[in-house]
Length: 200
Image 1 (cartoon, rainbow, N blue to C red):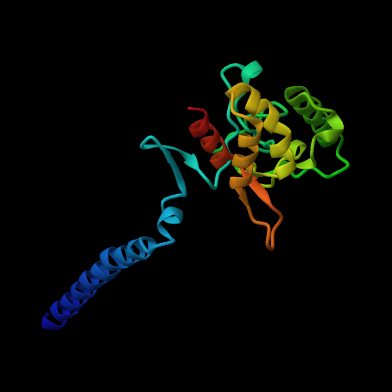
Image 2 (image 1 turned 90 degrees about the vertical axis):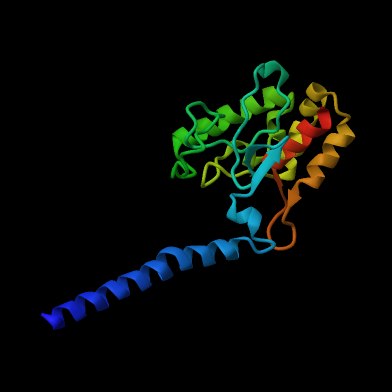
């Protein structure tokens, strides 16, 4: 009987040590590492805070929907394969592409429909609409667009918000990322926040 008690006591001690180490110590250590300078924003989801309120993440692109489509003050992300319409908005809770090939008739029709709609929205020639404006990203929630697509939208955003066009172009340049190894890209989420702040 005493051998059984010794074994139970050893098992209980092991359970307590494992609980303290793996249930308390390890999570606290990981939390502590996430507080290191340079990691805090990433650990918290790279949140964007405006007026003390979280309005989004710089890692997730959510295509904004204007109250009045005729007075659209926002820059728009790439189309999403999860969108019901050709331009969206997509469902940010759903990530993934369409997996359609480049010669698929449905994809080609969607690209043409998007090109026509974007050209009409921006008052531009359909040939001036860049490729990333009409093709969905692999994730469907990519917050980045090409500088060319941002520049295409700049005149509309300046007109609706009342900001000078030069100021809108400066905000676009401020929100550009990459450029050394990867191509330059504009973060639409941070750009829309910057435009909102400048237009207030």
